[in-house]
Length: 176
Image 1 (spheres, one colour):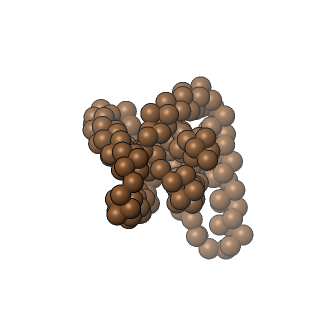
Image 2 (cartoon, rainbow, N blue to C red):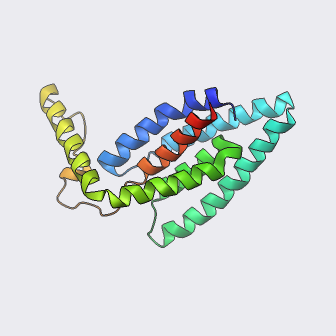
């Protein structure tokens, strides 16, 4: 994995994931597809270079991605995980290659911390949602839809995109 390139591509995407998952409980398929296509372009470039070490990292990431997608699909069918979370984790495994195991461990630990800090997380979600409503009022048009935390029918569960982004950011930080 080229840590600099991965950081340039992934960090803005992870920031968007955190905000959208906290506010709307959504991880955009378009974002996941863009990450997949940018990884495919990177993989094609690596394969054209012929570096055996980089090819090994690509293979490790691809195999881990397939495994994570299969497990994620099972967890989704059991309604234990969101489909966007599973797809995002699978694409991040592609990008993180040899560091995938660390990514998965840190993501699981961050998810546990989120579960323990759920009351604080709910307050953070509500504060961000109220800030977004104020921004809508200030702009005098409805630019942003109503955030999840302000809807009468709130979805239960943990916005796991925050844990996923934490795991990936940790790997990017430690790899650089």
